[in-house]
Length: 107
Image 1: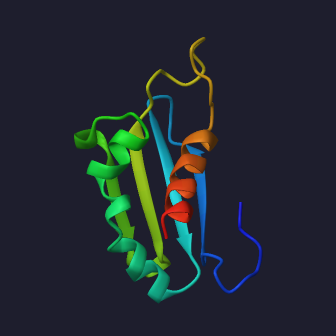
Image 2: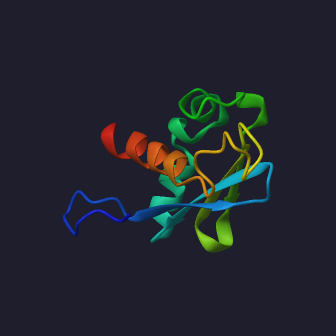
Image 3: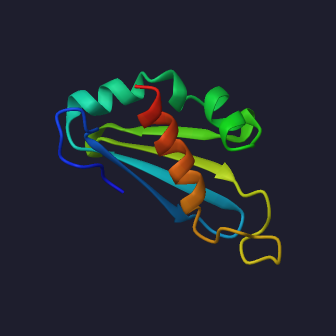
C-alpha cells in the first residue's frame, strides 16, 4: 500500500510474497537511489530489529540489498508451514504491514 502523494510520503513500497512453504520474503521497492541508500542504513531494517518485530529469531532473518534494482529483500522462516491449519497468513501480508507501519510511524 502506497501512502497519499504528499511531501512527507515515503518513496518506497513494501510487499510480501510466498517464498515456499518454509520461508517468507518481504521486499521494499525504492523509487530512487537516495531512498534506497537511506533505507539500507536504517537500523529498523537490520535483523536484530526485524526479528523481535516479527517474532522471529534475529539470527534467522536475512536482509539483502539489491543495488541494481533499488530493492531490499528480507527473508525469514515462517512460524508454521504454509497451508498448515495454524497458518493465518498464507502470503505474509500481515508481516509486511507490520514492517511498513514500523518504518512510517517512527520517521
